[in-house]
Structures are given as structure tokens and as C-alpha cells.
Picture 1 (cartoon, one colour):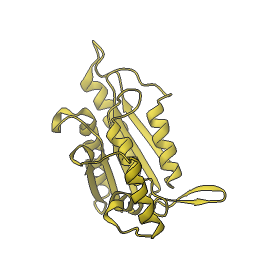
Picture 2 (cartoon, one colour):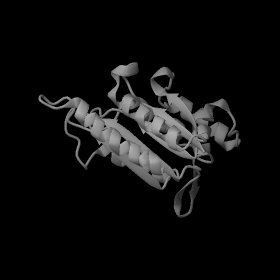
Picture 3 (cartoon, one colour):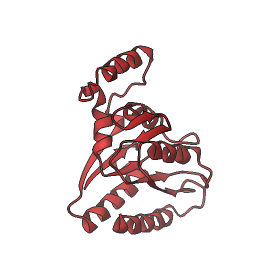
Picture 4 (cartoon, helix red, strand yellow):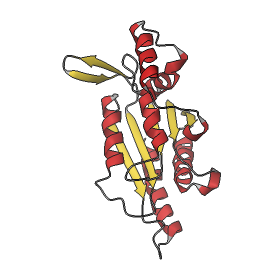
Length: 195
């Protein structure tokens, strides 16, 4: 089982509470499923650029030539071949850090992660499950546009089972941060055991 961890955490190392929760989930996954191979893509260490017009033209040229193995499509191919997806990102500006949106631009590739048909887009990803792990200083609630968007993107690319887990209110005065994180960790461990 090939698991792709899309690390969209912004703070370095142990400072990131989101990464801390992702690590707990991954460690539990390794314990319960030692045969799983987990590959991490750390977005903040990549030089990902948005697709401006000139790059889009080059991309279409490659796609028209069916040059799917071109390095331009490395991220899309890695996503398409993963059996499971983990996404970790903090809650930023009603969604998530922009680097995650830019990553989505890189993986949303016709012929690799989806196919356009007369009935609409059909996902080509091998992955059957994805989990989105998030932390937030304030309240997020159920109507989170970032999580809704991610769920829609993943479904479009063929990932039918999507779960999101958010530890929110962790920067509110008087909040017991460790207790909140421990409660979220317990939820993640349960998901990992059944994943």
C-alpha cells in the first residue's frame, strides 16, 4: 500500500501542531500496517509556481503529445499512483496555505489524474481514501470552505472516501492546548487503525 503524505505545514519541525498530529497518525498507521510505504512531499521545500499563461501553453503542448512521463507531471503521476492520501495543513484565511492550492494545480492533469468525458470529469487516481488533518487557532466549524474544496477536488480525481479532522480553538485564551491535541490524536489513531 503506497501512502502519499502531502505536507502543507508551514511552521518548522516541532513548532507545527498540524505536523505533530500528522506524525501521530502516520506512526499509528505504521504500527497497524507495517507493510504500508509512506512517501512525504513537503510543499514548503519545493519551488512550486502557479500556472501562468505561458506555463499553461507548455503544459497543453506536452499533454497534446501525450508526454505524460515528462518531469512537468511528476507530482501528478505520484498522486495518481498513490493508494491512500494524507493531507496536513493549518487553517489559514478560511482555507489553507496557498502552496496547497498551487500543488493542486500541479496534480490536476487531464490524462493522468482525471479524464474528460461526455458525462464530465472522471477521476483516474488509484487512491480510495484520503484524510485531511488540520489545526486552527480559532473556531472552524462544519462549513469550512477549504475542507469542502479539498473534498470536491479529491472526489473529482477519483478518491471517494474523504475524512477531515480538525483541532480548532487551540489559540483561544484559556484553551487547554495539550488536551485539545490529545483528543484529536485519539480520533486520528482510531481512523489509522481502520485505514
